[in-house]
Amino acid sequence: MKLCNGLIAGLLGICVLNSSPLLAKEHGETTAYTYGMNLNIAKVIRTEEPQPQVCEVVQVKMTYLSTQGTTETVSYLKLADVCVSNG
Image (cartoon, rainbow, N blue to C red; front, top):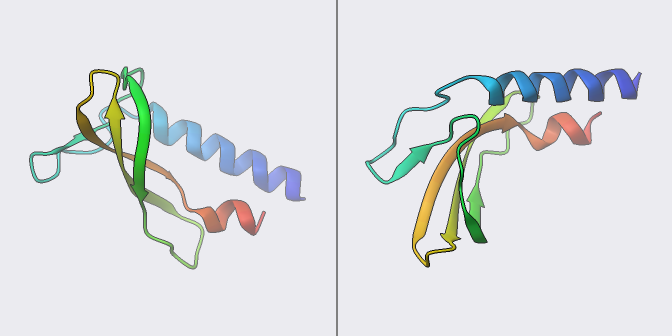
């Protein structure tokens, strides 16, 4: 049963990531991730995401240092951590 739930969660994640474009730009600084986008990440600085009590898709904002030395922010969708931990 846990394997089935894990497979469903994984398939849902793949479906979400294959949607293009996923999110509109926020505040003019955050780029919405689109499938196949080259992020060129040298180091992840931080990620911010809500922690809901139920299994759902959440928006994550990741701030990273690019290989060119600039700080970039990208947003993307993923399954909430509770989906995986309740497996």
